[in-house]
Amino acid sequence: MIKTANQSIILSAFISPVSETVNHPQFAKPKFDLLQPLRQWLDELEIQNRKLAKLIAKLIPAQCPFERDIVVFGRKIAHIPPMCKLNPLYDQFVGLRFRALCYLVDKCGEDIQSYC
Image (cartoon, rainbow, N blue to C red; front, side):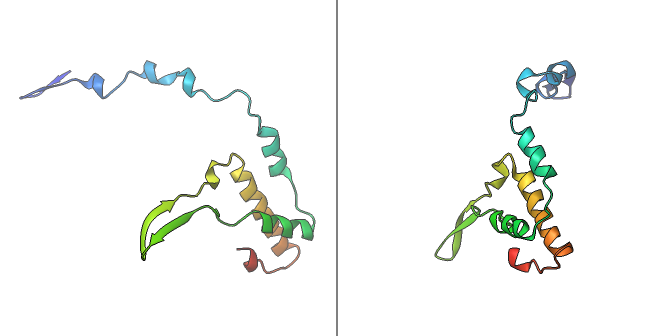
């Protein structure tokens, strides 16, 4: 407790002891991730075929297709945020699409503007 000229301030309301915040079992990471083998497989997948690279670039969108602005009479009244980040494999799919586009540019010499 700190006493000032006019009032007392109780610090325990603002600062919790270190021992209380360190080991909370409810915030512990899960011990086994069911999607880890799939994540690893997607990360290790190498693009070595032009048709496969084109298919991947077409199937995985460059930006979230669900993000929208709702406009009524020229005024934005609502915004639907991108939902893709909720996908637990989002980073792997974005990486796979990037590798496919890099393959098309580096190995095949294609222009990828149509995929962006």
